[in-house]
Image 1 (cartoon, rainbow, N blue to C red):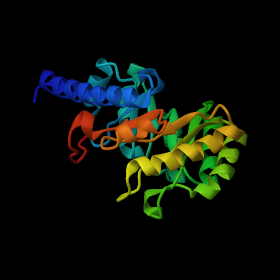
Image 2 (image 1 turned 90 degrees about the vertical axis):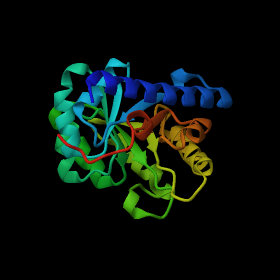
Image 3 (image 1 turned 135 degrees about the vertical axis):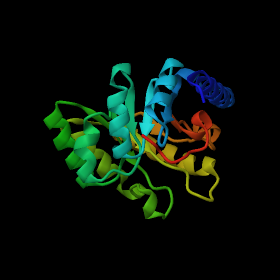
Image 4 (image 1 turned 30 degrees about the vertical axis):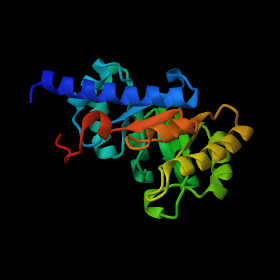
Length: 234
């Protein structure tokens, strides 16, 4: 496939996503400016990130440090905002802090401590979102709703990091709108203590409209932009 053909493919995907967002905004009485589209580029090469950037996408999300760190270096000249959205092991924190501007998946105090330490060491400030578990599946990450307040407070008090808000993935088998409505209430409770923590990261390719209807500010979209995933080849 030529670069021109791939650019046309991605441009068509982006146009489709933007049309979906526009319709969801109309239905919810919101403006497009309230929403940040995070293009999830996992398993796709740095060349796709460059094409996305050429089409005006400025926010890129990655799930795995091994892949993300390479792409962030290869695209360092583009001035993009990098979002780490996967489960994060503490032994990967130093690497992630080197390129990520936002970490969506903060779900335990030990991770807050590690992020704070490495951010201070690197002279950076990292925006952190509390990942909320909206189901009972520990394999998907996240902190139970009852523990969100304590974790949010810990982020707010730590050096080198900034509490941005909350993130969640819609549970499998549940109507996304109901799940995101719960997340919206949790986000409201967090903002009551921390008014500046106004980010709600929710919604992916299949549930964008439900996320927008329930106050999402950041949409994490991969498949609808870049196509069905294939094994990552560097």
